[in-house]
Length: 149
Image (cartoon, rainbow, N blue to C red; front, side, top):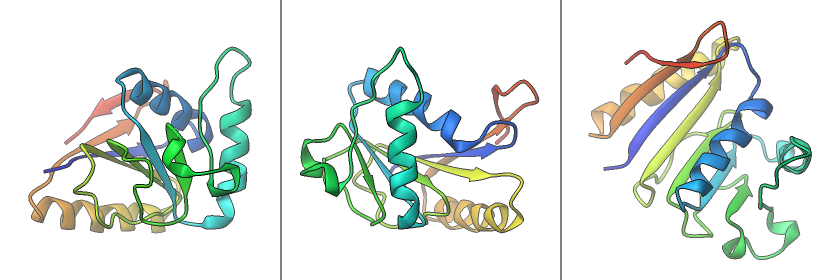
């Protein structure tokens, strides 16, 4: 079964958290897929990953950048695993679909958005009942992560 991690963002926005998690995935030798819930966010997220740090490079791309199967980090608005990734990041309200091809699924949601929190609760329940190993990480006041469940 796929390991599922819920990341409850409270202090730091997605645009600041996602790059470091992607870097950690690549450091493990994993490829990643980032699936957005709103395809119009692809360009903005793509831009963030190009400019988040002057000292780092995060290889990534969208379909507009070329074949996704060649990207270590594939950005998409669809439920797909075009690059044979080991880890799936679900952001901006993307719902878990077919997660079994992945070793890990990371569902990130904004704790200041009641709709996002409600959706995450529903996903937690469904994935738990589906037999997946689910954990819940909440951001603390300092921006660090604490395992809560």
